[in-house]
Length: 442
Image 1 (cartoon, rainbow, N blue to C red):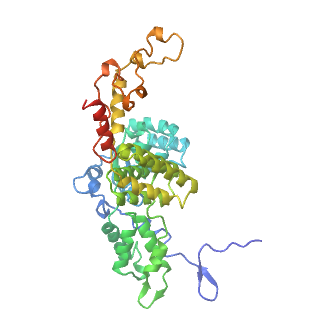
Image 2 (image 1 turned 30 degrees about the vertical axis):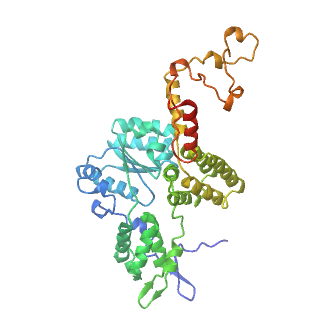
Image 3 (image 1 turned 135 degrees about the vertical axis):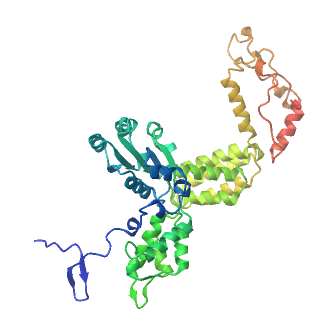
C-alpha cells in the first residue's frame, strides 16, 4: 500500500510536521498584475491620457481587438482590466488547446447571456475552421473578441479575423518601468515580497531590469526565486548578484517567428548601409538561438548579389562559400564563416545597378514591350531557318577586333532603352568606363 503524503509539509529539523499553506501559491508575476489602468507601467501610447485604448475602456466602448507584443509586456493584464471595466461575462481560451467545440460552447453562452468578452491567447495559432466558427458571432456583436499574441498579426493572423479587429502593439518595457514594478513588489506586504524582509541593493534591481529585454514577467520570476530561496538572516533575506543572475537563467535574446523577419531585415539593411558592427550584432541575435541556417545563408547570398553586386563581383563567391561552409559544419561553428562573410559584405563597395536594371526590364516585360526578338538574333541552328530570315545578318563579335561589333540587340520598340547603369563604385567603375567606350553615353 502506498501512503499519500500531505501536499504541503513543514520541515522543522526533526522531521516532517503538520500540513501548512505557503504564504503565496500564486506566482509573483501574477499577483503583481495591474488591477487598474493607473497601475499599468509603460504602454503610454495605448493607455496614456486621451489614448485610444484608455478611451475605449473608460467609455465602455470596447470593440474586438488584437493585442500583440513581446512576452511580459502586459497583454493579459490589459485584457483583465478590460474585462473588469466592461462588466460582460468573460471567457478565456487558448487557440492551441481550444477546439471548435469550445468555441461553439462560448458562442452559445454568449447568445444565452446577450454577449460575452472572449479572450483567445496565442491567436496566431487559430486554424481556419476555428476562425470560420467565430466570425459570425464577432460580426453580429454577440462576441467581443480580444486576441493576444507575441507574433505580428499582419503576418500570422488570418485576414478575415484581422480585418474585424483593431490591432494594437505593445512595446517592450523600458528598464525604468521594469525597475519601478520590481521595487513595488519588494515593498508590497500584501501581493509582493515584503513579508520575506528582502534586502536587494538598488544597483541589482537596476541590473535585473536592464537584463530582461523589457520582459517584466521574467524579471519578477527571477526576483521571486532569488528572494524566496535566500537564507533568512538578522537583517532579512539578502540577495546577491550571483544568486540573482542564477535565477535569471533564460534566453535573454529569444524572439518570435515574426521577429525573425525584422532581424533578417535589419541584418541586410546594416550590410547595405556598410555598418559591419550593426550587421554582426543582428547576426549574433540570430545565431544565439541557432536560427535556421538555410534561411541565414540564403539571405547572405541575396545580399552579395543585390547590395554589393558588380561593385565587387567576388563578394558573391565569398557569400556562397561561407553559406556552404556554415551548412557543412553546422552550429555552433557555423557562426564563424557567417561572421566573416557578413563583415566582408558590409565593408564592400555597394551597387544594386544590376538588380535595378532587371526590375526595369521586368516592368517592360509586364507592359508587353519587346515581344518580337530581332530576326538576326533568333535561333538559326535548324535547316530552313535562313529561309525564314532567322539569324540572317548576325555579326559574330569574336570575328571582329576587340571581340566586339556594333549591332542591334534589343527589340525594335526598345532600341535605345538603358537598363543597366553602372555606378562609379568599386569594380563597377571600370565596367562603366568599358561600356561607355563601346556604346557611348546612350
